[in-house]
Length: 305
Image (cartoon, rainbow, N blue to C red; front, side, top):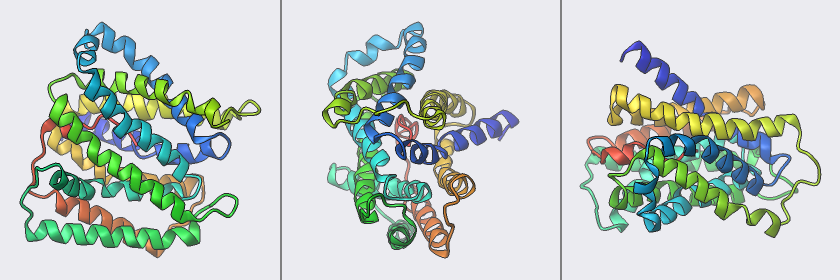
């Protein structure tokens, strides 16, 4: 890998590894719906002018039906549930649980009528991943910062919805929008997310009663500009530099960044269960995708954590 490739890879690993920390900071003061609206709206405002300049807007809009479905399944629902889950779980745990997306993707492919033959190595990966998730769930009750006495298992259930959404989204993308420009899909998906999520704020009574702190505002702005808009631009550059297949290795970097960020900034505990779950989930994700080639467009994921 060239020096440019290494720098891009490192930048993307950080950009997609710190959202869990930033979400955790933000939801301690504002409602999850506010975080989602702020993040998606700012991200769309940054990317849409670029997409318009590249004339990538109209081709994507012509397929608005799968675009809306994709946006809801891959961003609207997962981002709202992820933000809500972080009120009950440590940021590092949510980051590690999302590493199970490739494992769930196998089940999604089967249910979608496109099962792929699984080798013994793949089945071993599924087993390892399930044990890893079990280890992380066992960790949650002892280290989660649940609010108002709520069980951390609520957060785990919410993360199940997030993982399923992130596994189903690429299937919609591959079937209906594989030939569309990625930047256009991302920009419009963020815009749709902002439009759909905005009514939830007054409906749920989520307006902040006072101006959020600079720390919270900074977390939401960073989520929008760095973890969403900039991250996708970096991803497109990295794909051009090293190819879509090698970019998928970023999946194994993000959880490590999430654990480190949670431990350093929020002083979240890194216990033996954390390490066991980390190793098993990542090993399972690697083994279950071994010798299985996905379409390039699926590799270029168009949603951030």
